[in-house]
Structures are given as C-alpha cells and as structure tokens.
Length: 106
Image 1 (cartoon, rainbow, N blue to C red):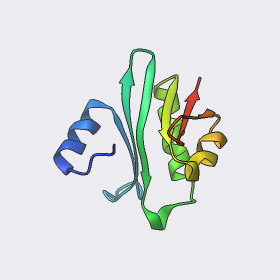
Image 2: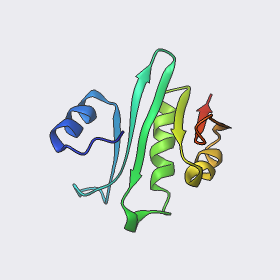
Image 3: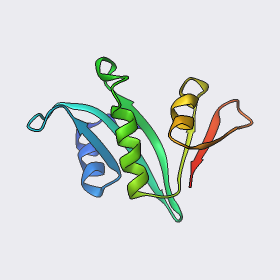
Image 4: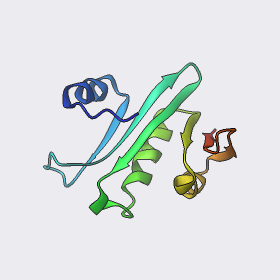
C-alpha cells in the first residue's frame, strides 16, 4: 500500500524502498512514485501512483523500469484495469482466486 504520511514516506525513500519521479530537474513536486517491499528473492510492488494530470506520459513506465533495474524478480498484485500496464512491461500475468491478478517479471 502506498504510504500517504509524509514522514513515513520520507523514511521509505531513505531506505530505498520507494522510487520517486519529480517534475523538472529543480522541482520538488512529486509526479509519481513506486513502492516496493524487498523479498528474499527480489521485490514485491506495493503500489504505483502517478498524478492524474501527468498520466500517459511514461512516468509510471519509467518508475517501473527503474524498479526492475534495482530488483529482480519483481512481483505485483493488481486489478484488471491495470493489467495491460503490467503486461506491456513484460510481466507474466495470472488471475488469482479473488478475481485480481498477480504478475511476475523475471
């Protein structure tokens, strides 16, 4: 679950479990984040978020590509509406018993 408390988020960033995209080189305006939980064999994506006005500009893809460079394999659980996003990134996707999806990027 993406952290919404600023202090807790800062702790996650410092720990390296959150990757952040900002607008412009000198801006402090966050436009996207991906949060991962490291596992014994890679990492699990806890969430990906991009500001609504900045969607469909490749920010989420860039964040996930950075996550894939840092951790492998990557896993994620997600809903049907974002399945194409994960498939485009190369995740192998299967439906789970609860109607959601689980993806794995080797």
